Amino acid sequence: MDTPVTVVIIGAGNRGLRTYAPYAKRFPERMKIVAAAEPDAARRARIAQEYDLPPERTFRTAQELFAQPRMADMAFICTQDGDHVEHACLAMERGYDLLLEKPVSASVSACKYLLERAQTLGCSVTVCHVLRYAPFYQKAKELAASGALGRIIAIQASENVGYWHMAHSYVRGNWRRADETSPMILAKCCHDMDILIWLADSPCKMVSSMGDTAFFRSDNAPAGAPGHCLDGCPVKFRCPYDAEKIYLTDALTGFYVNGAGWMQNAVTPDPTREGVYQALKAGPYGRCVFRCDNNVVDHQSLCAEMENGISVSFLLSGFNQRNTRTLRIMGTLGDVYGNLDEETLVYTPFGKVPQVIRMDVQETISGHGGGDYRMLDEMFAARAQGTRTATDLRRSLDGHFMAMAAEHSRLAGGQAVDVETFVAGFPAQNT
Image (cartoon, rainbow, N blue to C red; front, side, top):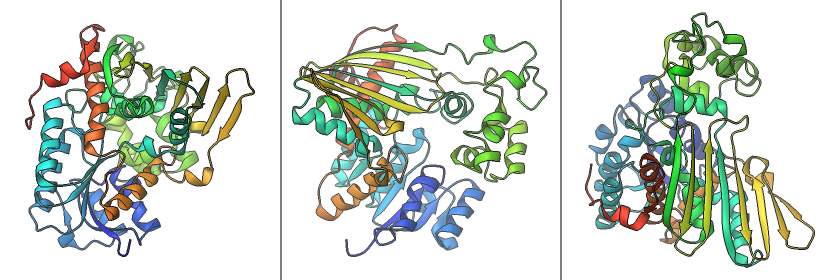
């Protein structure tokens, strides 16, 4: 591309400020940030300072920014789940193409409405289903599509959230309540539903799902546990979910060993040692995991039949040491399995020696196994060529609808749900 794509960032949180914005520093010839909107004053000041944005190009709300004449080629919508459709529509009405964080919405009707608006306004919308771009999944897709595994019969996958990530995001954090954001199968796993549909090369036909909140409930609280971990908890030293451990002292996730990471930046705009400690004393991320107002599941499983007959099984669990994903694709001539965190696949043609396939670590410089930056690369290339991206809005909604149907099944006690019929029951409207 001759000139960089100009971008406005809506939402300077971990995805907007810490994931996508740094691409402009690494590849200034491809992307330039020209404005931002962020309600938190400290985060707004930080993105303005880091990307040299003048006061007239920094806004408190998306509405304020989109009230201005169009000032960039694209808008990156990195706000909370419930705001995505409103902010996306405001941006498209001003003529912006979009990078839209997932999930698009927890409402089938709102998803349909946004698709109609994008088609009417002629705007390109890429949804951040970044796993499609990760070398790990691209290699698995290549093997499945090549015929090396024969006819694909079944796919098995798991989302191992990690006990510390579960506590941070889905018990204490922003995605702890389905009624305020999205059900966990959508908020966390629409990535996985999208990958399963892509690997199977088929939308989902029927799905059944079960799960609940088994552990992170008040009736499981240890005797005498206070509302906040720093308020003299009697089981503090043996509790792995202790906030001081997770955010400050733990060798894997703590500030003392690793400095400020994405979790510390979520806890406070002042991610210093003292800033994190003070935020934990009374803030939401310092709460006892048994004393929160969470209502999303801590485990969920689903079984599905794809339209082409492939069987799919998936497990989401917050009870694991490692935050990673696993995959197994089973065909009539061989199978392949692997772990995203290890960036390794093991391909076994039946009756032959297994082949270990390791990803090139040079390709994984960004998050999600290298998918974040590779998605941006492809999106900018597609924009220059006038083509669709692999995760444009129309393609991405199939995974959303599979997740929503799975949640409907879970709430109905595991009842099998026909996805097409389920989706057809909702009119396109901005809810």
